Length: 259
Ligand code: ADP
Ligand code: MG
Image (cartoon, rainbow, N blue to C red; front, side, top):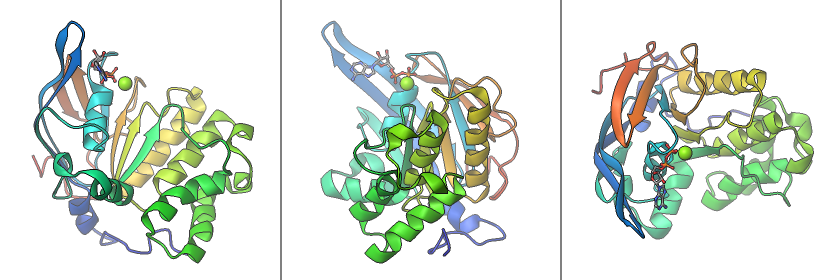
């Protein structure tokens, strides 16, 4: 069974997938109300990311990294500005249309895995497929098992998450993020609870997923991601203070084409 039954990319160039995975952010502002008044967490972010880039977002605690990812995922809304993924204005989607769009377009990976504890690993991976009905019901479990096999944890499929190691749980969470074959992966400190060897394997996996033409945006505290990422964006107090190419994206057009 193919893991990509509806390929978005030309296998040789990755270009079509690249378009489906492109991100554009224009003047994204986020203000939070607080008892002491309004607090501006993001001061007008502008960013263009081509499909197939593996972007790391770094910055001190409180610099706005999670806020930024949440705006991209449509988990939260900007106070001003626009966030566009594959041509869709994320900030203008609401309710069930937003949920359906997110389910098909974005794979989310979190620091604390966020697997549902009462479901098996395979059932966790099937949740997004059930929610979006992207695959016929009889294909969902075989697809979940194939994704778990790709993550190297096929034998954990019918166990509960609590019986897995942290690294295995994060691999299960990544399998779940890939359930609907989304063009974009957003990960918020996915290696924050993993030992360094397990972290490396997760970073390697994200690099492979980007090389397939997916866009990967990962918030991280890891110091040396230059072996894996194509680009590093640094946030300071809600502003982009640095945006550096680390190396060219593998599967898609040269980095910078969309800037
Ligand atoms: P990071 O992920 O880089 O640590 P966050 O995006 O979580 O940063 O937070 C950025 C700033 O916004 C912080 O000062 C934080 O306290 C503030 N903040 C985040 N979420 C909220 C919220 N829901 N209400 C008020 N302030 C918030
Ligand atoms: Mg954060």
